[in-house]
Picture 1 (cartoon, rainbow, N blue to C red):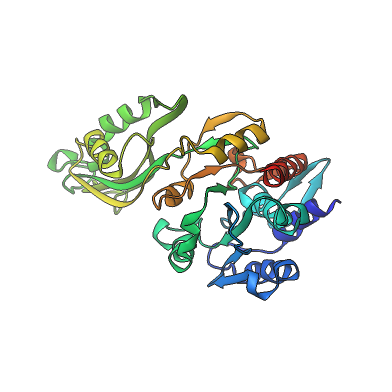
Picture 2: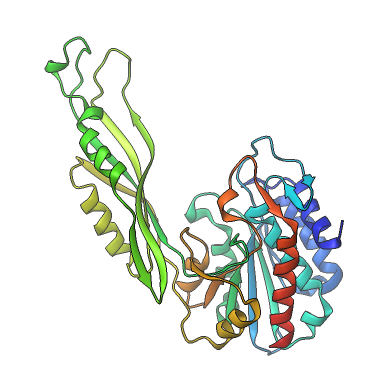
Length: 351
């Protein structure tokens, strides 16, 4: 197994489910200190900032070190040129590439100051994301000329990202004995026409700078009823809204409220802005030329949004496969790691 693939295997074998990132953070810190010494590795809780500033143009790499919970996939399995296991695609393949780039002498002596940010709690609630504390504690990261978030993109260069809002949408009725439903009102069936309309609603394609984003509304959870013989008086669903970077969070919230206007109650639980596209950035132009890959819109939410909200030009690029993220059969093609490393190495050494 080549060293880059072995690094990924080691990372996958080190469990790091959200909230339990201490061991992997320590392992990465100890490895990075061999190259960057103590001064070049700053720990912020269970997150790390690795590298040094010398006054060259600043490029930053970002990767979260946590994973979703295990689904019987905590151990590495290799079949041919594919590695299976929790976090292989989301996003320990990206972490492995980051580590090897930070250890590469050609990159370290190249035209850029390269900083790696390894952060925790990305897979949990947005307001607990460890990157927020890192950015607050190391505000100089905002001076980056370009940031690359190494979320899985199958080695496509994905710009921006959709924003996200989650809301409790509630329909209310009146409880009654199920043998005499005419004495009450069933909150679940009251919601039926609205749910049917949402089921048949097509994604709205929105083109931003030539890239196609899709605005979608999805019901992701549903709760109602207290017993098998009682008409439910309340029925609540979580409505998940993914919106393109043409809308602010306030505009997106208005759109969600309009879509759910037939409900009796709407409570916004969390919201995160869409990520912007860094137009006219010469380093992005150079990166696009070096990668020579497909350019696409990012349909999901990533920390590109968190970075761009702070004025940091950021893009998504990583070796993982987005479609298999969070699946029990998660995997990554190992040649993806080699391609990602060599193309980024070329960009970071050529300038």
